[in-house]
Image 1: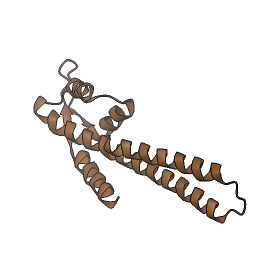
Image 2: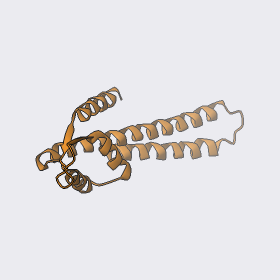
Image 3: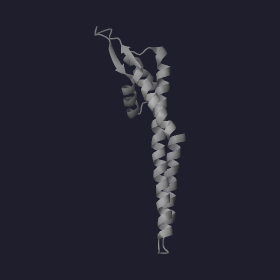
Image 4: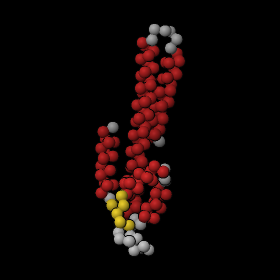
Length: 136
């Protein structure tokens, strides 16, 4: 967990330092700076694929030689977000399993089958959803 947070901080710092100039040839405007990090967040929120992100970068006027490095950083951001979401799912599923186990052990009634088997099975499914988000 700490490794993921640390790599996210390093990645964020790296992308913040990446600023590129956009040349407005047709309008004659002065050079403007854009933040790749802000655009990368928007592209990831829209759910764009790598080829679509590459075409967006080309439309912004980013040089072709800089695009592969920036695409690697966008992929790292995507994986970081999936890892975080997956860990949340795993935590929720584990808590569901724990709650069902504690309730079953503490319950005085013999009819706890639904709580034991139902909530535990649901918790296991949620844990596997988290694993798929991380490794899938």
